[in-house]
Image 1 (cartoon, one colour):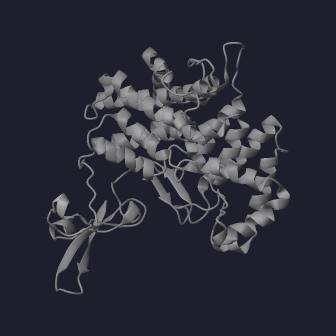
Image 2 (image 1 turned 60 degrees about the vertical axis):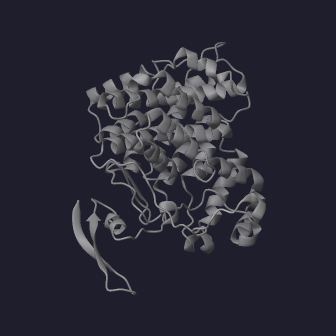
Image 3 (image 1 turned 30 degrees about the horizontal axis):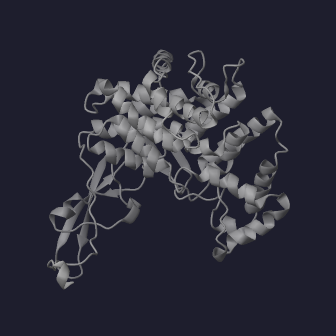
Length: 430
């Protein structure tokens, strides 16, 4: 990390403050503003959109150029050549594993997939129609009551065990949330399957008949998990880091991340795309929908176009588009009405100057909802699968934060706009 100096002067005084400018390995330079507090100043940045809250070596995004790297590896290469377990190892350990390291990692995760038997009883305390994300927040948080031997974030060995348990058990928790919602018996994980296959088995198998996961569909799910494994300092990842900064146990931190992801502005975008396609209803109404989207007073938005971070093409979108075709080819669903609407909507939007000038390209959510729907996964489970994938990134980010030499509890400042000091007035004089 290189360093230079910036000077801040004030128009109403002769005061000059020198601040270090830090250069990372990639990305924009960052002004280290910590010295401002000692001079009586804080900065104002709602949403932290211009503030680097941490130094991290895990994920890099360049929104202008449409780049997403995990530990320096382009997402396109990982999605094509890797699998989710290898990506999870990369995020957590910093390097791609050797064949032996991967086999040991996969084997360890595989043998942690079972939940404590008493946790199964917890599900019966929820309503059958409870949202799967509500159940997941509760169940992941409850892990701290069952796995206290890996709850100390400052013990490296316990951190490793907690990481394995979270990667292994969150799919089981998610699948059982769905099974409970449907009034169906829980299916226990099978060690003969890989990560994605095991999740599909727990979701869709029943005790009545043999279930064999389709390898093409399992590969599609695995790719979705890779594409959503981490995404720098987003709302849920920042939540995990803030919770973890206090020394909270890892299960509570990941539960906090799941709660943040549940928000419709964060994790519900692919579900919103499907609702939009259903609202459009027919290819003949696409032109009308596009005109409504251009009219800001209409309240209608084309979901799945554009991205807060990517000002160019979302690098995950092309991968997801290809995966979408593979899944629909395998299932013979290319005549699916929603998919035909989606393809035509994409075609028209990409030729429209309004969208071209604003760089409103399809993002990963535009396609992932269609893929998940084709896999038979209900929309209420979309965000749960997002949480399943992002657990790998959350665990890596939490691990990095807790083990950092400059680990500090998060304590943001504020711009106070309330009343100045005033004296209490007795109730009979108000």
